[in-house]
Amino acid sequence: SRMSWSSEKLIEFETNLASRFNAGEIKFPVHLSDGSEKPLLEIFSKIKAHDWVFTSWRSHYQCLLKGVPPHELEAAILNGRSIALCFPEYNVFSSAIVGGQISIATGVAMGLKRSKSDGWVWCFIGDMTSETGIAQSALRYASNHQLPITFVIEDNGISVCTETRE
Image: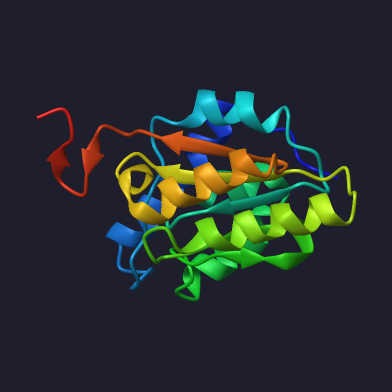
């Protein structure tokens, strides 16, 4: 069963990771999710255990909210998988490739529709990724075929180190 999460618990998880990274315990890229706690908690209140979640390299919160136990997630991060976390047993997949999750998520949605499943796909993409051709094509394809998929565009206001509003 999925653990009950609050903004504070999510922030505590990420703060611990940041401390461990800064102490040199984590020697691999780590992308933290600060600032997105409240919207993600709201979105995940609608996501069912058998639904699918596809996300990008910034996926710690999505994994936790989908039901991945914190100790399993932490072990994967310590083993260098922070930016490509995949937990098939929880229907969670992420990709470190910009837009890499979009086609797979769209394909899974098509499979769910064809099998008449009541499952749903939730595909999280960054605001800059949403501007790419693959994202635009997938959005049109999903809409035209009325696929069971929701694309969630996460806007943290920056593209790497550049403010996107500028």
